[in-house]
Image (cartoon, rainbow, N blue to C red):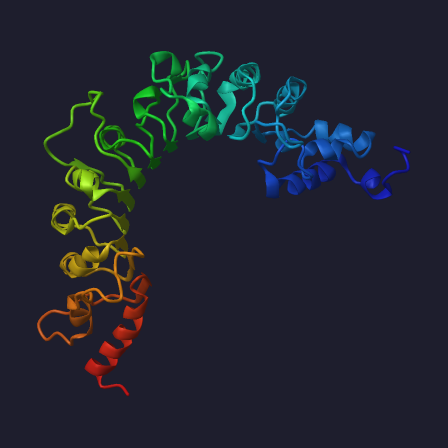
Length: 401
């Protein structure tokens, strides 16, 4: 049966068949162990396919697995060795590994899987890990040899960490690899930066979500090469912890930053503190989502940075729109603008939104033109009716029927 199974593949050179297998696996390069596109299924066709698949390390260099009890998740000890067998076939290639949350497996499963991952720590390249915080410290690597970790994502195991009354924050839960990683891409979700031991000297892309603002400031100071920075759902200062790095009195200059996204609560002065602590002379793209006005600090940030912004997205309650013209008057280089007012903040029977923005945008302007390079304008959220008003304003001021 093996000899007569496939007359076509049998006649192709092994190198060609290996390339076909690689292309077949690429669309789901981080697929689940038991997914239909898994290399394991290639090896299940016949003996020759299995020999070729087992001898093609490229299809084993990336792996996605979850925890749980379903068919496509590792929830039993007898499935744990599959991870080791999979990675063993990857030869010496850089590894892409994603561990997704799901279910509540026994601690023994976590320990055995993490022990397997540690064996290959010198080949970690792209790691996206979601495990309970109490097991975070087990990801320590296997040796002090130089590692190649370039992309690191640390997420919590939501269900397990939420059930813990006091999530583990002792030193034993610190993510600390024996050879300190120095990634270029770093994503941190609901973890304390104080318990993540990495070097930020090479960091170019950072995305931080659901952490305290003082830890964001620490990260910014440690990463002078940042090009893209995303700070989402940032909280107020951590009252119980002293910052590891003193907050400087002057602004931190991020000379390479070209894309910035800020999302926080103005009530805690989170965005105000961030805006007052940085300067970004190369900024081109800015997304600003807030729950209250902070126009004076935005203006000060613009003046200290002196950048030539190209795209700007601003979102918030109605007072953000009422003050947006003050900020935009300092952004003459802007080419694309999106305004979004959160639903529920503007009631139909309430006072109308201020028209200073539309007045400035549609007026001819003899001395200075408001947003002279603007090419794209988008209204969303509770501002949907302003799109019609904008057309009416434009027709009135331009005289076009």
